[in-house]
Length: 200
Image: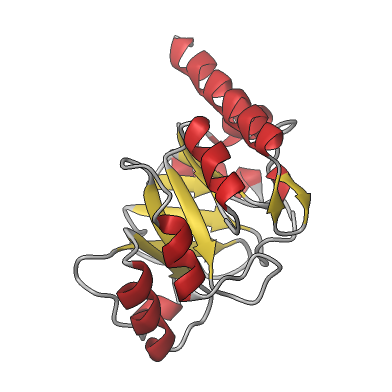
């Protein structure tokens, strides 16, 4: 189970994610309590251990902003709404993680890997798990939206996603990550995935 903790704003959050052995962390560049500048993200990214992917998270960014983020942060992935990617030029060395939102037109063909969530990001709104499950049978879906340690096992059983993405569900207050909640979320997600693997 691929796990991403999104909306990193502090060294403590990075340390907690690293201790939990997550697969990826996200830095948010869209308007949000978790928004950071490319410079702040680069400073935090320097604390990320090797093997954890650094993902730049944007929504409807201008090309100038994309260029600044990629130049300053040097992310492994650039995440933004799938519609944005028609107009933007992402550097060849940066992989793309398209966001497909419930209620919007689903791209055809489907991306090889995509993040699926509700209409809005970062507000704890659950995505449609039924639709997510349909898509997860066709491609690698990273499920986002309203996940936390209490519901992630149920989400994984319902959707059978490639991965899960959490932000507000592991916070004390908006933008401030709780190390214990990160650890609990990762434990719950990995346990649920291990149970699925054991099923016939």
